[in-house]
Length: 490
Figure 1 (cartoon, rainbow, N blue to C red):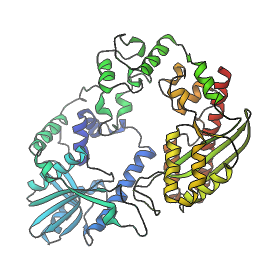
Figure 2: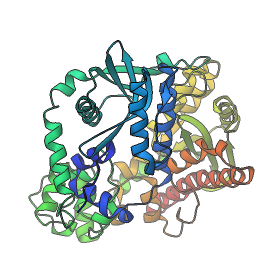
Figure 3: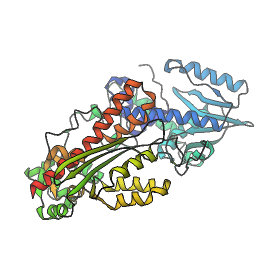
Figure 4: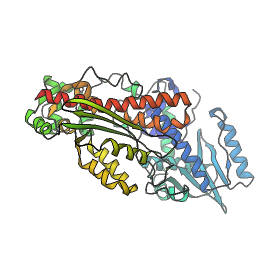
C-alpha cells in the first residue's frame, strides 16, 4: 500500500482519534456533511489568516492554487528561500511524507520565525501540538528556527474608528512549550503512519474523544448504532459517569443501576423515563403564574457576532442584537405582534433599541425564555448607548423568566429528555406546533444566516429575511402556547 501523506490537520485528527484519521484518508465519503456552522468557522479562519498577514506586509504568497498542487507550492517555497525572500505566506514544507504550510514565515538575520494564525481568543493545547509539528518539520528541512508564535484575537480589543490590527491581534510565543513535547512528535508521526498501513478501520469505540478538542467529522457514522436518547443524554451528568455507564454496557436509561450517583434533577429525568410518568408541581406553577400580570409581552432576541468587529464599540465575537419578536397577550389572548429585523449593511443596535422601547412602552410583564441572555444583551446596550439607559433599565426590571418552571423541574415530562430548552419543551407540551417546517429553525442558524446576508443576491436576501422573521415569531408564539399549557395544568 502506498504511503499516505500527513498534514497539520490530519496530524491533529490522528492525535484525537486514529479511527477518524483512517476514515479521512480511506473512507472520506463517510464524513458528515459540512454544515453552515462549520463552513463559517473555515471562512472566519481564512478571513483572519489573510488579515494577520498585514502584520508582516510585503510578503510573497506561496499557497497552492488547489490541493493537487501541493508539491509545486512546496518547490515554490524553496525557491523563494533560495532567492532571499524574507516574508512568506503559506510557506510549504515536506519531510518524510508529512506536508505542512506555515501561515507566516519571517526571516530576521540568519534565523526564521514561525507564526501560526488562529481565529480563537486563546492558545490551546491543540495549537501547541500544531505548532510543534511545524517546528519539527521545518527543523528537519534545514531551517534555523529562532521562535514560534501563535497569532490570535484579543477579545479585549474594542473597535473605535479604523480597525487596528496591532490591537486586534495578540502574538503569543510558544517555543518553550513546544520544547517540552518536541521529542514526542516523531513518535506520534510514526504511530499515525503505521495506522495508515493497516488493512481495516481501527476498532475504536466512541468516547469523549468524539467531541474534544473538535467535533469529529465522522460522528454520525461511528454513532449510528447508539440510540438517539441514551445514558449519554442525561443532563449535566459527569462525563466520567456517563461514559463509565456506556462502557459497562448500560446504554438504555432504563438499565441504569440504582446506585448510580446523580443529582435530584438527574434522578427526576431517569425516574420519569423509566416509569414514563410526568412531574407537575401545581403549587409552584400556580405561584409562578399568580405572579404574572394580565398583560404579558412575550419577547425573544436574536444576535450575531463577528470575529473581526465591523462596528464601533464592539469587541471580537461580541453578540449584537439584530432582531426581536414580541407577542402582546392580554387576559390569555394575543392582541398584537411586533417585530424588528435590522439591516445587514449597518449597525442594527440603535434602531433595535428605539423599536424595542416604542413597542414596550405599555404596562405589563415582559416574559422571556432564559432571562440571563436577554438581560445581558440589554446591559451591553446600556453601556454603549447610555442615553437610553432609563428606558432599557425599565425593560430589564419588568422581565420574568418562563424557563424557570422547567429548569427547576416543576413541570417535567419524559419527552423533554432532561432538557429545559424551548426546542424540547415546546414539542413536549404542544405537539402540534413545531420548528421542523421552518427553513431557519435554530438560533445559531439564524445568527449565521444574518451575518452572511451581505454575500447573498437580492432575492436570496428577501427570502432569508422572511425566514428570520418567521423563526423569531415562532419563538414568542411558542412561549404564549407554553404558558397556556401551564395555566391549564393548574
